[in-house]
Image 1 (cartoon, rainbow, N blue to C red):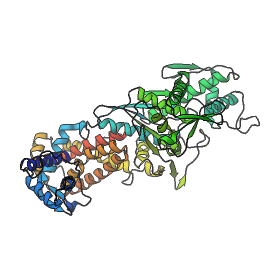
Image 2 (cartoon, rainbow, N blue to C red):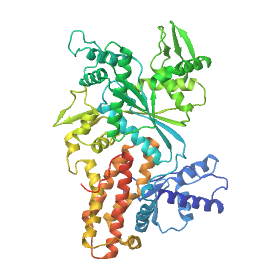
Image 3 (cartoon, one colour):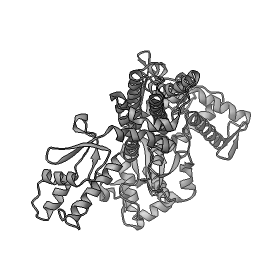
Image 4 (cartoon, rainbow, N blue to C red):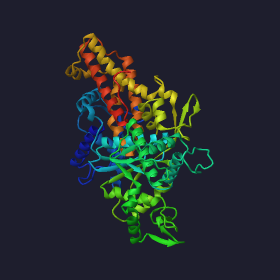
Length: 567
């Protein structure tokens, strides 16, 4: 509907130019067509006249925005979709649509089917979406789960907005944590346990370390992304233990993510940046472009040239690099691999490194646009059961694992609850609520709306009613009651929600919308019996129910949540 209204307004502006009311060379302003917060103000409102008046004022012309708004309204072509138009305030144009305009949305949804809500605004450009990127040192925790579902849903909504999406997982397989993993596994392989006098001080204490050590000593083989690593009965070979432990835990993390419905197109190893010389190459380029200096035996990047609050050390006096340097090299590789846009999803604890990574990319002066990459930061998750916080997992030792949460609830519930709030907001995951089959459980409430339509079709068959789509479309004018109109208005919002979610990188908007749509559907369902004897009315209401089912399925797919036919 917004697209149709924009087209009508553009036609009105063209008519005003042709009539000499507006200068022929005056371009159309970037006006908005939005839904007012209060229904009484109309179905849509536009600020086109106010922006026009502002542009005319720049040339010295004296223009009354409200008078210009009236002229624009008078110039609009006739449309069966518009019931009335009102002016408000200094020149807002409020549009009230006819019931027929909403009824046509039902037919549009049936025609578009799975494609309803999708658009081509991304123009097929390539975007790399990076998420999870956990250290392969243990089972994934609930925070990783939130990163996984947010990143996956961002990828889904961007694809729905016409982007060519590449999903990427960045493995931090180099550094102190990996060394601690290797020494922890070696200690277990030598028969030590947490609490023993010789147990390493910085070791990982979860039971899973024992599982890794036992598999290594048995000589198990682990395959990850086409590479096979085999253990051996040698607790003294720390390098072999390190490779095996990393492969073992990478395979385990991949299995957890697969059970959670999260997948990737590429796994990128931090270690490859060093092995391929990309870190050294990046440092050389930064030096060559004159944005570095040496002081106190260290190499510094002048990040203050690019908005950072202070300059940052790149290479310490001992010759090792600080952690943001490989991040710069990694994001440079994204640009070199054709990612015209990059989105990086991280925990909020990473916020300190964002400015210096962006500064490093700008300092390379290689055409990377300012602001590259886009960062989406998520807050941590508090898990509750029986009114008390759940913190520990015996297997992990110090945190609740993603696998624990999925096994206690379901993959659908976990995905919904972890994505349903804005990423930068604190989130409480209530296990009892996630398991409940009640209207208070949002994922159950939305899925039940989809299943209810499927049940309607089964009941129709049992009663001997065959749905006639052509008759339903021809009878849409019968959907003139308030609950039906409210439901059709909600259905029409879906493309706008998908566009907004993709533009702002906020997939929680889809979850919020689906709950509102389900609420409108349940309200209509209780107010309007569907399987009535009147065939025209029955088919019209079935058409509306089926349109609702389609939009629910499309929205749930963007969240990676199933749309069940029975519950």
